[in-house]
Length: 349
Ligand SMILES: [Ca+2]
Ligand SMILES: [Ca+2]
Ligand SMILES: [Ca+2]
Ligand SMILES: [Ca+2]
Image (cartoon, rainbow, N blue to C red; front, side, top):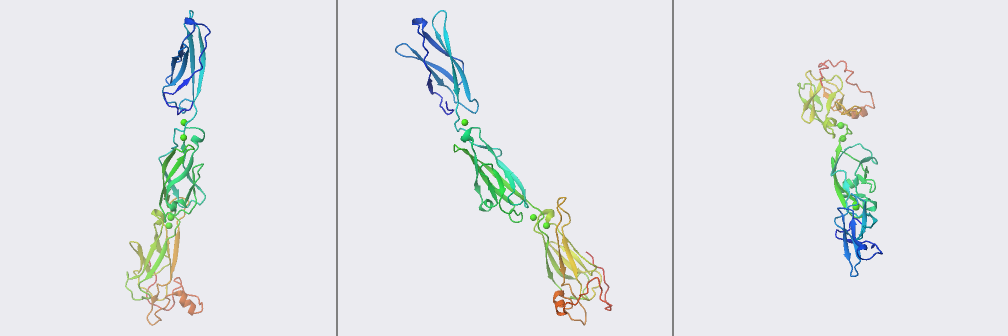
């Protein structure tokens, strides 16, 4: 008996036989009490009685997959004689349950450095029917084209794998709807919200805009000589940057929102070329084991002019070096001898 059988359906039972006649013949049927089934006894014109099993309520295979009833046939004799028959009802499955996802919304967080091919998460639905009625296949029923190239959903296992590059700096959030459909055509849906988590995968980048080039040697302290823009595409601690200037130089970095300025320091600027490696690094790793990233840039344009010397001086070291046939350049660690002007040092960071 299929579980979708509607209440009110009747099932004729084989008639019992009693060779006696009159009151000693079959008088009635009885059924063990059962909330789902009852007995209807009909009498045909020849006086024979027939029993029918009547389904009173909906069957539910998922609650009870079989029922045992006992039919008793009683005669009218004295003593009363009876016979019994076992009625065994197997309830076969109907597809009356849609799949049910384990969550209405799958909230997923993925590090942006997860490699392609790795398992991101799994969606799962259950179905209390059996056989193909409980056989679920999964698919994305709604997903942006960009996300479709980034994630794949295994139709059988519900495994979601990464099939394209993740990049927090590019896309921070994905949204999709998954569908689970059983073999009988019933379906269910669940939302998927994917947050991409930032990883420190970008080093700071520096751009240098010289304001004074060359720098007159009589520049007063705090004269802005260059503007350094610093940018780190990461977020939070991963995008936090500090800058410093290597070496003992008459310049210091002054911070203004979103940019650093190289300014003449308190001591007088002395003439001669100066070269400094300016470094920007991230102050602290986000997690143990995740190293901060740094970048540095050799500043060659903070040249200082000296009276009576070629104005361009040491302005762009590479060009000057090329002109001089690669002669070794003096560095900040080798103060020019015999100039006698200004006081070195005093550069602060
Ligand atoms: Ca089902
Ligand atoms: Ca079912
Ligand atoms: Ca960074
Ligand atoms: Ca990042």
